[in-house]
Amino acid sequence: MRTRIAGTGRAVPGQIVTNDDLSKLVGTSDTWIRERTGIRERRVLEPGRVTSDLAAEAGRRACAAASIEPAQLDCIICATISPDMPLPAASVFIQHKLGASCPAFDIAAACAGFIYGLSIADSFIKAGAYQRVLVIGVEILSRVLDWTDRDTCVLFGDGAGAVVLERSTDERGILSTHLFADGSQACLLSIPAGGSAEPASAETVAGRRHFAKMNGRAIFTHAVRNIAHASQIALAANGLKPADIDCVVAHQANLRILEGVAQRCGIPFEKFYVNIGKYGNTSAASIPIALDEAVGEGRIKPNDLLLFAALGAGLSWGSAVVRF
Image (cartoon, rainbow, N blue to C red; front, side, top):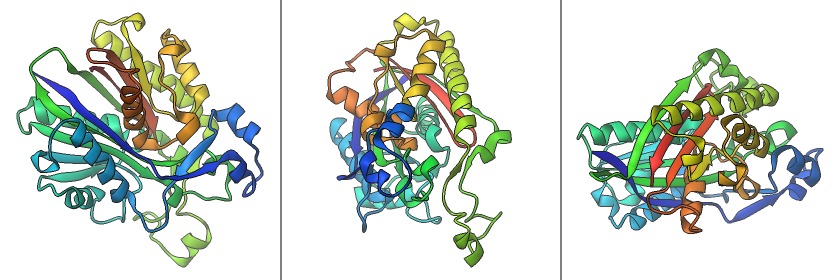
């Protein structure tokens, strides 16, 4: 028995913020951003809409692609670090907006969140606990960015992607997932205030402590090394060679990171699906958005072997091999 991806879906805001737009806010330029990251533009959620709105839209589309109604779902897993509010979970709002009545919970593994969610859902289905699980990666990072900080505001964007996972008895499905974390590097990417360490106060707000803080150089180094290593572990676990992979759907954090991973793994860069130029880094939403786009473009076809890999705050990272 395997866990098969039965349907994919995505939802992105209509508002586009280009590099030229950002150059009017901070000391940067289109050339500076593109040469260092590969990003040309990103999406920003419109005022009045929240995380669960975009997530429910992506989830609804994934259900339609899987030819099921949301009421048929047995569980909803939402990967996000930018929920509607700290309490309750974004997933319960998503459940209500979809008209579902199943268990729902969030996980906070940042950019690796979708792979973590995929692994959890796979375990549920293989154990016989559930038959259909909706896994959503969604981030509204525009609401937690310091738009005066050039090092972070140029990198991230908003979006949501989702997959419906179902029990399958053929060869298609999730072959393996591999999860990792290193809490000793947690402070490399964090939102310092708003939790028990620094409860919200006038001082934390004035100090801009509720915005994302990142050591970009260190994150870059960890990302190339750890994503490549996790990818190699996934290949070895399934007795695969780089040439066996049809498409790599990796976290879209930085074009240079993807190029570094390709070189370390010996996988031709042409096999990597890349859409970072349009969306920037959408964290947990990155892989499912790219997956849905690749499927829609015919880049990914039934029975193709896919490699997923990502690294995010935590540090958390992971990989998966899927026969689509």
